[in-house]
Image (cartoon, rainbow, N blue to C red; front, side, top):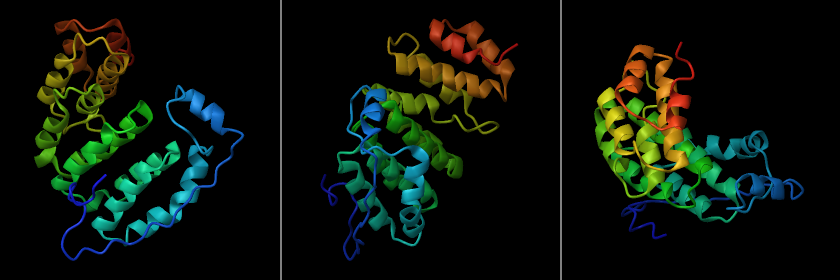
Length: 229
């Protein structure tokens, strides 16, 4: 991937070299790959251990420039072992306070690279954290994913506000859900149910009325009504 084309590098920018390797366990790597439908190769390192091994890198990144961090994220995302994509997203989240909307447009491009739920959902967490810090930019971020031809990006749109309560925009959520109301894709219908289930913890009346007013898939209804009495 061309860093200059993506806007990673600017005149006079200094990019610190990434010196980081994970140490995995080859004995557990096949099982981890199988759990992800053998879509990716794994080095063989579970989440807790991965976070322990990457802690110093993440802490170090907080003292680095956005240019360096974005370059590291790009490099890690290009590596073949799946755990490196996880570390890349962790880096983006760790430095959430450094990003601007121009950076969000760059990171959006990684959602559709090596896509599966185990990367898309952490990216959704990242975008969700960003919009909670920049509520005035929520609609712009939402529009990056809403009505995308790629269903993984639309999953991000549906679940973008998953962590929000009183700041959740119900019109935005409604548009995202109804656009994919009839979409025959498990991960989309699961996302619809997930978004409704989560919001029902804060506003069960709204979710109940929404479910009554719209014909949704059995999966979405089952998931969305889980906490409703």
